[in-house]
Amino acid sequence: MAEFCISSSLHHVNIVETIDLVQDENKAWCEVMEFCPGRDLYAVIKKGHMSPREVECCFKQILTGVLYLHSQGIAHRDIKLVNLFFGTVQGHLKVCCLSPSLTNNQLND
Image: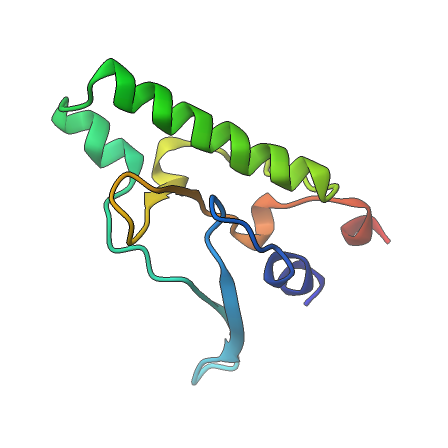
């Protein structure tokens, strides 16, 4: 639950929003996250259709999202291409923060 409280408090243009916490039919807790209709960055790079300018733009957005996390006292611990998604706006990259990948002082209490 602490992980959900942390991830649901994150609000930034380059972070995938955590919307809700629900239980499934097996009583397992599941996070409901913002829908990102674009592909993940791995799929885009694999196609090989990114210009140097697009690569630079993506890199800046990743850094901006990670900087925001760090400003909140959070380390991601699992940044990889499949955890970076393009949102509804063309070229808008978002870092997905799944709870097990987050760490801060609140989780250690």
